[in-house]
Length: 223
Ligand code: HEC
Image 1: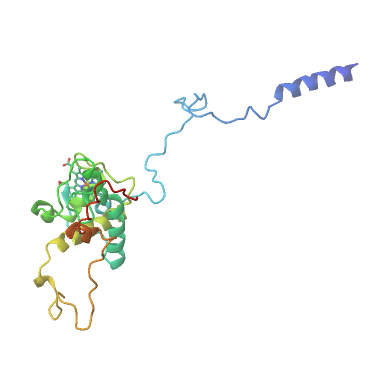
Image 2 (image 1 turned 120 degrees about the horizontal axis):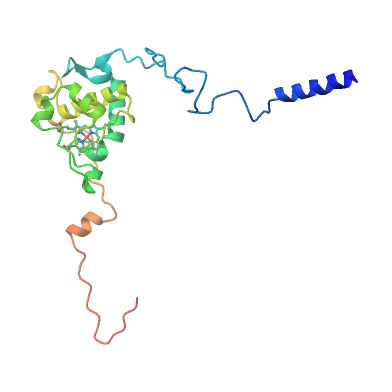
């Protein structure tokens, strides 16, 4: 009999310890905890914690500013790759409003969005390169910021490309290195194709087709 009782008690104790799989020893998100003194189960990040790759120690690279003023240099060397990347990113993220040449007549503007100033006005030609980085990073007036969509390195590449766009619109023969020429006539023997004529659209407009002879009175017109 005592053995029977012992078995029954043991069973009862075991049942008390039972833990079903659906009840697991973890904290549900944001539930109150009686383990921590502040009763929060969601623990704050330890002060001074920096996620990998997010130290952002190079302040100029991430802000374009030096002591509150826009800097006027690129934080890395400008190579042909940087310019190509800047051109590609610019045409994706900026040209829809600013246009591919930067005059502010992009397609979204043609559809009614506020027209941005042309990059080729004096004020923006004189603006330091860090200013362009800053506008992309923080937005400007009606323009949203692009810090989420465009990485810091790409924002710099775009800024470099905008500088090139500005130069391209104000270049003179004097900007061409000595010994080189701005070609204005094709070299001998090069055949220049005439402008491509799309389905007679251009000629049709300039030279109307001869008028058709008026149909004879009462005569039937075949379609
Ligand atoms: C949705 C349209 C739109 C896009 C896309 C856009 N911008 Fe703008 N941007 C504007 C408008 C509008 C203004 C003028 C804002 C104002 O004056 O309120 C502006 C102004 C600017 C200015 C001039 C600020 C000044 O001092 O006048 C710069 C520089 C500029 N944008 C750079 C960029 C760059 C670089 C990109 C691409 C990353 C870009 N924008 C993408 C609409 C756009």
